[in-house]
Image (tube, rainbow, N blue to C red; front, side):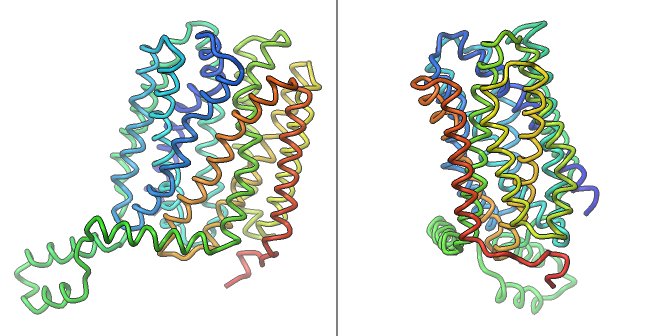
Length: 422
């Protein structure tokens, strides 16, 4: 499984370079150039995440029933094609529409990729999630750096074309992966059909497979299975609370994503420096995730999640009181470290607490819940900044993250380290 896992990390790297090149800091400044207000910028930035709110769970649930590879391809095409469409946008309303379409990329790809990681690495999932999310975080690191530099030296058009090209590279890498199919009802029926063509196995073998297999599900059966998976996941309070806690971290992340570029330019920095701030955040997160995933396998997920939330809240609250580039870099780095702790540990904890047969559904549900937080961050902070300014809005969002940490601590009991659990 090493080769598919490594290639999956490569696919995630190029896909998220493409996605984050557009998203930070290019998108906010592009929307501002079209005349968008702070409230509108917040909604534009969150629009792609709102797509995930509605699509991530269905995508993850369908991946429990059908071969995950084709759904991954759909998500990757949504990374590759929309960046070229930004070249045609001249109106804020059409920018909102395109952002919803671009959001299909992470809405479909992200939860299924996490489920594939769990399929490929049944043991030491914390370390596997740490390695995979480090690859995607490397994309989040390189995307803003490249986007800010391209915007500074060549303008919006070059940035968008580059993002589309990188998305195409991710699609090409996907075809080299050769992921094994995930066993499911449809896959077992395909086994029956293959067996029927193998005359050497004999009729009794075919009959035996046919009797033990379940025929391809119709739409009603698919919906029923998806609903059953949803009930199973939603009935697991610890999975829901863990996902909601990660969503609170995403509220803070969405706030920075939407308004750190605006704040940075407002205090005299340029677009390239704004990109560097996101790059520093991503570098720290990238470097920390494998170690934090490994640590969560040894000392437990819960204490690390709590530590990460406190770090994210403290660094976010301090941003609007900092006017030096070096100080903002330090805070961005600190936020990236807290984000790495929460992200690697929360994904692994959800996988630990989920049933294997509903793993895709659980990852999709977690993605949908965290996307609610990610979409809420820019919208809520846009309203707060418009009414109260940066110095009130950022601490309010930070306080919300701390409240979520308290709820998580009270609701999710301490777990044994994974390495000693079995």
